[in-house]
Image 1 (cartoon, helix red, strand yellow):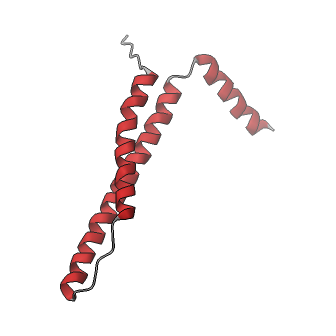
Image 2 (image 1 turned 180 degrees about the vertical axis):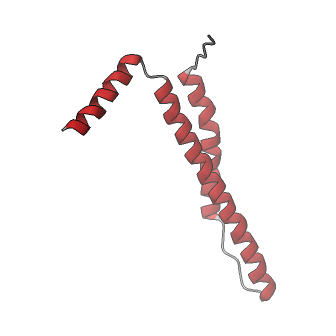
Image 3 (image 1 turned 120 degrees about the vertical axis):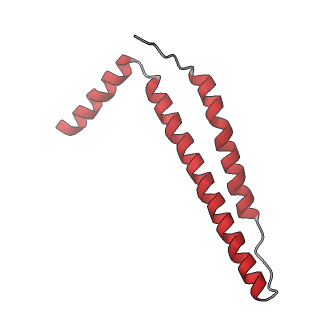
Length: 97
């Protein structure tokens, strides 16, 4: 049987980088100024910039969400058998009450 070991601290550091980058993108997007008015071309450029800005927001939000899911999964992987039994017992108690 193959055994896989996971170092919680190292994985936490690995997951920190994409989350920080995604949060930086969201912060930069929020600070991005609106466009001025110089006619029809400006409206088209403003629309394109808004689409790009929204795509950046969605991408960054996805990265933040994925790192949160990965962190939660990592926390679950690091649980001991006793932790799991306790959790299942609490879950069962909630359903029987």
